[in-house]
Image (tube, rainbow, N blue to C red):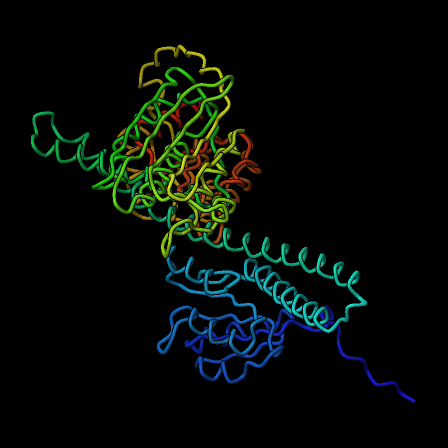
Length: 530
């Protein structure tokens, strides 16, 4: 007698994915690709047809486009949760923004991916989404079983409650990590694009500045003003990178008061009318091992939070002072204050202390920044009594004064040096080539990694200027292949992207952040060649 086959266990059956994309070609490509990976796939081009197919437990993951003619992916996910609250949602789009990413996460999506999709990125996201859905179903099953128990099982009930709480905590931690990772990927990509634009703008402005005669007024003044504005734009992209998932602090000795004084105009501008800023910096000459950009951003976030707590205007106080072995940065306001419940969660990512607005990232950034610097963040607040945030940083010694030798004559340092520039952005590449040629270098260029490697085989340059984020083959991969055949080839990376962990594996390579001035690039090349 043949025994009937038992139902597949949750871990044994294949993941069931429902795909919704109004572009039939995209839908078909996803169905074929994911079906080939062993998934059970169903797909629809119309959201209403997809909703009809959703019943409790019918699918593990909903993979939906964000922008569709009749609705949005956010609205579709909300309607889908009415039919199956355990269904995990992943939203994909080719036109993402920080606002749409935050909205997607708050609507219940477990992740947010940008088109064109990469299978290597999509597969772990789908696996995490399925895991999250299973955790939700298990929690509901536990709750239902608990309700069915009798009073005689009280001790067993307490144990089940404990396990449910641990699983809920794991689910929340997983979702929080996915939210931060999604925002980080999007923000890093936006910053990369802006850095490439600014690199081309600054490079061409510097070339124009060099060609203008000193008496060419007011043209020279116009160019100087444009350069100053572009440099401020570069600082904004640095702040965007603060939220990138792989952005690391560049911890260096910084004089805290001097750094805050440089950002004073920006802080006052952020307050707006009706709110006064009182500044009292009493840590003059004290240094901390920190990141200057992140320190300015932390102060800006605290100032903006204080402003939002003053709907009717008031005073925000920014101060510093010294305590044994540490520097205290404090921002206090006379605003509405926080309840104890809000205060307990104030530094959680995506938990906003504002009513009806805010992303919930400001205080989280301040708290994370302080911890990474070896310090901490403390908040005192009560309803009607305002808020005081104290950020303390360990003191360090100022950097030793370096006496640089006078530069050698220009002709012996740069004339005749052959440089290969590899960058996929035509505008950035053109400005780099023109800039280096104006410095006396002999320049060749390539528009991608394979072309650059082919040029290396034809003629070995004295140095390579290499973009990091290129399609098909990253700069890190190009560098590894180049150094395999030319072990002592100097390489100077130009990166406008936060994710530079792969660059650490390249030996004897200099890393410069886009945008960069002609003089700094020329100096880096001379140092690399030796």
